[in-house]
Image (spheres, helix red, strand yellow):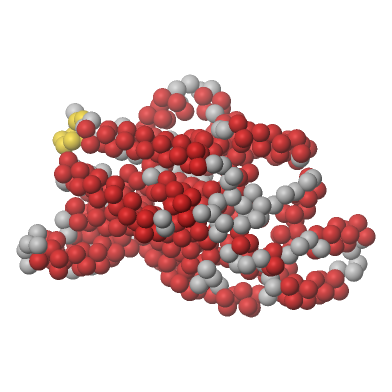
Length: 513
């Protein structure tokens, strides 16, 4: 068992399913009608050609060129193509780019799981990596020429490099992720912030002692109660006594509301003060990320916006209901994790243990949820007009079935978010969980169109950190994998074997995520 086993077992379904999809759907479909011809233009050497309907950068096309170039000699030997390189860039070959990335994704997930949870056995880590490789949104688009799989691969590589403190390499993978999909700049900032948090909150003992002396000398005027609280917080056992890998393999136990709130306040205070005291060292260490962000800002100013083409259909809009949809979709995909008796018991214990703060947070979340679905629930024209996408039916049959329905779903949204954040808080510090929530909002809120594909990266981040901390047995992962397989069988069967036609447009239409 291990990464080779993950790669081999992932290939067992990637290769045959790719053959089946290419046999039944040989021509470009949906967004492929833009991506495939554009990649073929690059294969012809027309690098100045650009389809104005494409919204994402050309990173996927350059990766496809490298992929086709690696296959071309073998294709010549097997006489699967003529002497022309452009003719080798067929739809099936371009789709195989994502098949390769899907296998790499499984390996990267395994490596991250082993880093975050070194106490996990190889067998358990392999099982989790394989289950996550079956995540329906990721699995389905493995067989089509979309940017999602390549985007996830670049993000996972960036995150793994940052965890290993190889920041230059991480920034390079971040650049690649942005060249594939520009909203990945938010996830690069998340990765950089995660690195800064680890750097400032896990200093070596000598540096922490020196910092505490400096802080004590600067804060002698603080009243006794606040000084006592801060002293108690500083006397906690430092994380630096753990190995860089093993600091992720601990569980935080907190016994009171004061510990929860003061822990977050202490982390924020420590991050700000330490970052200021070590600002030049931090700027040098994380300068690769800064360079990429500055370059991206220059690109936005030059381009006049974040999207490249079809700007009128992708206007940034305050779609706060989007984060509600993400929480519910993520929770339903992993129902054994969120709707189990153990999880309900854990949430009730949290509520009882910290009932004043928990009730206040629940009230605020409910108010924010109702406000989001009432004032910031958007229906994009694509959502209303295109019945090939599943969100079309979810919107009409569930969310918009009755004017009360969207309000009745708010408590379920809130529960899903509380479940997600509670599981993450068992693995990481609360300030890290806060950064994750803000990054998810920054990516999803400006997006007017309900596209479950956009949920993939935040879903993977949640799963990577919650799974290695969860005490759930193997049965939980087997159930989750079973749910994934059932959804995948249904969606792929609908895509391949239930085509239909529009009366106002020629061609075969197919159901898709």
